[in-house]
Length: 192
Image (cartoon, rainbow, N blue to C red):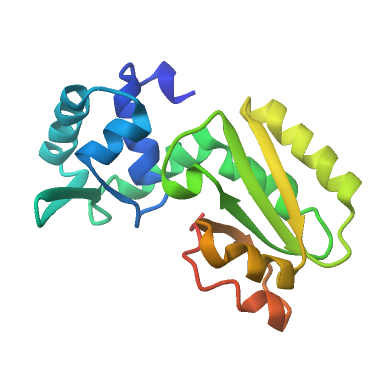
């Protein structure tokens, strides 16, 4: 969807990297590896984002780190467009609000690292959830967002172990989670 209004593939990758999760940061060489693109094309796009005020940068040692400028007047609107492109809005609307006993939903894998992927990886946390219903909801959302979704289902105690060394970002949480699930919510929640 984003590629119909933004012609530069590098620019799309930068938008997803920095606007999907506001705390994501990166430096030129790391983005070269992540995007599999030349440093020159990335540098050109980073310069445009900096000049527009959409990104901020700071030097740490020999590396210059970039991240989204959350104070920019268009930050929230751009983030909403990126959410729709990735499909987070559809996940919340068609899965998280409909699955009984769901306590939280997390993005894991590449997107949790700020790297675009053809496959969106999700972890659903709860007790005694209807797995067949979750599968049907996921299939529905895959068709809507035109992206493959790999999903895992865990209990809160399993997730606590799973999260120890893996990047994860919370997409949705129940209003009144159980005590065991509440410990998992130390991450940044995506604001809708």
